[in-house]
Image (cartoon, rainbow, N blue to C red):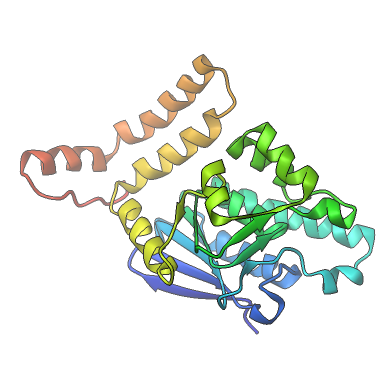
Length: 258
C-alpha cells in the first residue's frame, strides 16, 4: 500500500500523505517512501516545486506514529530519527522548492516537516506546535534548531519549552508560516504560489534558495562570498542570456534550466 500519492501538474507536484486515519502521523514506511521520492529528484529539473500536504481536512501531520513507537526499542528510535533527519535535509538540499500545505494540525514531526520546507501556507484552522516536552522528550528531527532560525530564539523557546499549540494567525505573526490561505482554498493558493516560483529561471531559483540557506548565520563577508559563488552558476547559464533576449524582444523568457 502506498503511503504517499503523487499528482503532477506541469512543473509542480503534490505529494499527499495518505494516513488520514492516523492523522497522517509519520512512521517508518512514510519516511522511507518520502526518501525514495526525494532520491528520484536528484539530478532532475522536474518538478520545480513540490507541495506536501496530508489527506483529509483534520491534519497535515500529527507527528510521529506513537502506536508504532510503543513497540520500538531505543535503537529503533535512533534509526528512525536518523532516517527522518536525512530525509528532511534532502528536502533542504534539493534544487526543488518545497511548499508545506498545512491543512490542519501539525504537531511534533509534522511541524518539523513543515520547517524543512522552503515555504509554509496554512489553512485558517491549522494548528502547529512542538509538544514533545509534554511526552518527556524533545524535538528530535531538527525542531530545536530550525525553529529558532526561523522565528528567533525567544519565540522558539516559548513554543518548545511550553509545548503549546499556536493557531494560524499567531503562527503567521511569529513568522512560523508565510501565508494563510482563504477557507477552502489551501491547495489553490499553494498551486498559485508554486506556479509563480516555477515560472522563474530554475537555475536562478535553486541558486537563490541555496545562497539564502548557506549564508544564513554566517558573518556578512562570508555570506556575500556564498552569494557570489552561487551567482557564478547563473552568470554562465543559457537562461540568463535567454532572459536578456526576451526582455529586448518584449516577450516572456523560455527557460531551459541550463
